[in-house]
Every structure is written in structure tokens, then in C-alpha cells.
Length: 198
Image (tube, rainbow, N blue to C red; front, top):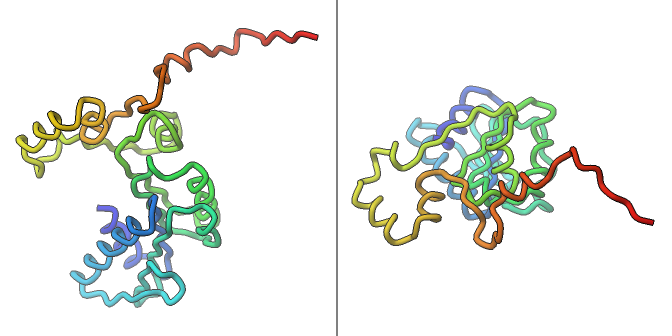
């Protein structure tokens, strides 16, 4: 769906820039490859933009550029019309903070997509916080394309925590967590003043 949205934005907003980010260049390349496939179906002849290894340049001047998952090498883009962060729960907080300014000038749209990966990181914070986000959750129970026998095999083979995370879109506790995150957060209160000793 997001690859279709990227092609739609490029096609109907001439000269626009769509950025795709994921934890690795391989994953980002897969996203752009899907976008190329949809463009081909529409008869659009897109080619590389000549500057970025993972990219598409449309006849109307729009571009889709895929970036690797490294904060130090993604900078330099501005006036982004659409930014898609795939597998956002596994993208580093540093990378997320580095790409957000790309949206400042053009007031572009930001889409974060992912299965959960524990109660940690920016994706969990954005999902569970107040923010201006529009949130969509599609657990396997709402996906008719996946047969019930496969779902039950997965539930049996991967264990409850991983199944709930991967297939039911639940933010479970991180593997290494000794205490439940919510329990720790409830231990803090602004009502208690810190004690200082000389």
C-alpha cells in the first residue's frame, strides 16, 4: 500500500520528493523495487535519478529516493512531500531524529509502518503517546489473505510473546527486561521532591 501511495504522490504531485527509509539499504531497495513495479503497471517509465543509488525519477520530475538505515549518511534532503519509514520499530532513534527535519520546509507527510518490537524507541513512543498521529492497526485476525492453519502453526512454533508482537500488533516487553516497563513508569511521580545531602 505504501509503495502505491509513493507512486501516487510522485505521479500527481509533479516535482515532488518521496523518501523511503528502513533499517537497511536492502529493505529500502525492496520498497523502491515494489514502487517501480507499480509504476510499470501504469506504463510510467521511471529511471534512476542519477544521484542516488536507490531511486526513481518520473517524467514529471518527481523522485522516490530510498535511503540506508544509517543516521550519518542520510542528511541533505529538504522539502520532502512524503516520507515513509518502513519497519520503523527497528529504525534507530538517531536516524528518526535525523530525517524529521526533511519535512520542515515542505510540510510533508510522515508515515511510520512496522510490527512492534518491544516497548522501546520512537515508534513505541509515537504509537502510545498523545501526538497528532492517525493510527491504524491490522492484526492477523483481520487479514483474510493469511490462512487460519498458518496462523495456528505460527502461534505454536514461535511462542506467545513473539506471536502477539508479530501477528497481533502488540507491544510486548523487551526480551532483556527484568521489570515491566509500565511498572517502572508508575514508580515515578513529580509529587516527591528529591533529597539533597551536603
